[in-house]
Length: 353
Ligand SMILES: C[S@@+](CC[C@H](N)C(=O)[O-])C[C@H]1O[C@@H](n2cnc3c(N)ncnc32)[C@H](O)[C@@H]1O
Image 1 (tube, rainbow, N blue to C red):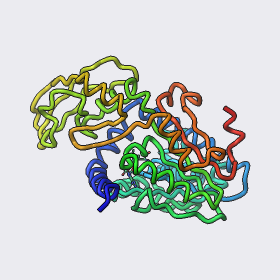
Image 2 (image 1 turned 45 degrees about the vertical axis):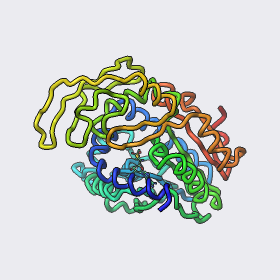
Image 3 (image 1 turned 180 degrees about the vertical axis):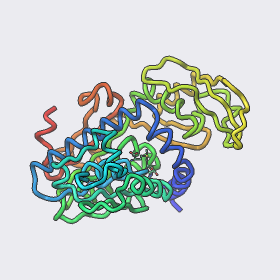
Image 4 (image 1 turned 120 degrees about the vertical axis):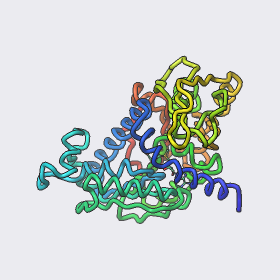
């Protein structure tokens, strides 16, 4: 087995194991991550509305590393009119509580499918459960589909539809290291090239690990495990659960984290236990961009230059954009960047940066 395949198998197992906690604590949790996800969603709405108005082909959204189906729920809901649904239908209730999920006739006109791929069976099961719960199991106007499989083996799409392939919220950072990142760029290009489609990779920047990353991973210690830069490691093993007492937000200067420690039967072992940043390991994390935890979780925050290199290597530069997203939204997207491949030159008028 080659090294990429080996990492793929290990990571697949890890994501299956942490799927439920990830959904609860990250997707529904950390305020800075939520804000960034909302920015990505608003950005995508804008792109889809623009494409829907400016070109004639139906659109297929391809969500690479789709996780628990955040975009299936979003666009399933936004393209579903509730005119004929009872007020007590879960979809009516969802829309009542979230104005952002109101019916969008412009997107509904063109978006015919949201297709997601993820290597984790557990993630896909969670996504399907969510669709069931919100009453989107049978959406008549559009297909909400999933495939369990590899982000690196995307198939070429046919030219009758406009494929928009997206890989959001730093998923590239958990896709099996540099080899994985190269494969992802190649694979997304293969998927959209002959259909003159669009590929978008949105991820954090290494340059913001100090101000955003450290605190984010510390606050989600119960999902990804104890960051290796936090000491001591007394309760860092999988025999214990450490529940953080607070979320650390961007630019927090607090180098301590207070946790309650539980055993696997939920017995409280230690209340208000204090972890402190180890200066050398913290420095090393900032310098390398490698986020490691004692639970063998690995992520990488790619520097701006590294993503630029990947664009130059795999996506022809004249058809691509590389955006520091703080120029689009300083409040919600300061620490991130976007690589965009636009074969059909669809987006040139919305990126007059
Ligand atoms: C950071 S999560 C993002 C989930 C989702 N896109 C969202 O926005 O909530 C990354 C996802 O990528 C998946 N993943 C990691 N490596 C993968 C690979 N090589 N192929 C397919 N999925 C992968 C994981 O299972 C996980 O669900």
